[in-house]
Image (cartoon, rainbow, N blue to C red; front, side):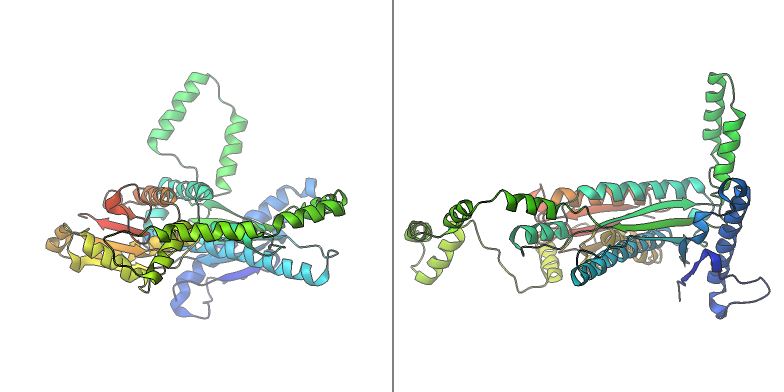
Length: 451
C-alpha cells in the first residue's frame, strides 16, 4: 500500500513511540512520517498555547480543529504533482457532496433548517521525494505555480460549466443551487525561508541602501519562518463549503407583488404559437429542400433531412466510433507521427471534466512515461516517443482554454528538475487555429526528447 491516511482531532492525537512499531511493518516509513509530523504540529501548538496563555486564557482555537493526515510515499516528482492534484480533487468533491447533502436536508425540513458550513484541514506529508526534500526553492516554486494554475483555471470554459448553464436556461423551474467551495493550499518545509546565496546577497544590498536594520522585524520574520519548518515537506489543504447568498426568494416575492392579472394574460398570449408561426416553419424547412443540385441524384428522404440540418444551422452528428478510435484513426490519416516511431507511441483516455482531474491524469501519465523512457536504449530514445491522451469531455468547447491548460502544464514541468526541457507539450482540438491540428476530439500529447 503506497498511501496511508490517519485522521484525528488535535485533542486526541494518534502517535507511536520510537520503541513501538505500528500494526504493519511494511508501512513503517509511512507511520513514522505521519507520527513525526503529528508530534511536531502538536508541540508547535502547545508552545503557542503556553505563550498566549495570558492573553487567550490558555486556549488555542486551532487545537480543537479537525485535521486529517495523508502521506505521499512516491519518490518521483511528477507522481507527487499528480498526488497533489488528486488531493485537491478529493477536497473539492468533499465540499460539493456536503453542499448537496445540505440542500437535500433543506428541501426535506423546510426553510427553517440552517445549512451548516464545512471546513476541514488535511496535512499531506511528502517524505521521500529528494527533489522537494533537499531544495526548498524548488518546492516553493512548484507550490506557487500550482496555485497560480488553479487561479487561472477560473477563466476556463469547462464542459461542466456549459452543462450547468444549459440546465439553468432550459432546465427545471428551480435549478439546484451551487455552493461556494474553496480549497486553499499552503506549504511547510524543513528549510522554509532559507534563501539562496543570491537572495542573501540581494537582501544585504537592500539593507545597505536603507541604512538601518529593524531588529524587531527580523526577529518576527525568523519566528514566523521557524513555525513553518516541519520535519518533512508538507502541504496544508483547507476546504470550505458555504451556502450561496439567498436572493431568489426576495426577488420572486417582489416580482409577484408588482405583477397584475392583465400582465399575466399578456405574457401567456406572447407565448402562444399562432398559425403564422407554423407557416414560417414550413417555409423555413421547405425552402432549402426545394433547391436541389443538378449533379446529385434525387432522393426525397435525404433532401428532407439535409434541409433540416441546413435550415437550423446543423444538427450534432453522433458517431458510433469511440473517441479513442477516432483519435487513433485521425492521427494515422493525418500523418502526425512522421518523425516519431509509432512503436513508441501510447494512447490513454479519460472522462475528466474538471481541471484538477485533468492535471492528475496528465501528470500520472507523465510519471509512467518517464520511467518507461529512462529504460529505453539510446537508439530507441533517438527515435522519439509520444504519449497521446484523449480527453473528449475536457474543455471540448474552447480551444483557447485547452491551450492555456497546456501552458500551465509546461510551467509545472519546467519547474521539475530532470524533466525541464526534455518534455514538450502538443495539443490538438476540434476548434484549433491551425487546420492541421483540428482533431475530432481534444488530444493532449507529450513528446519526449533526449534525456
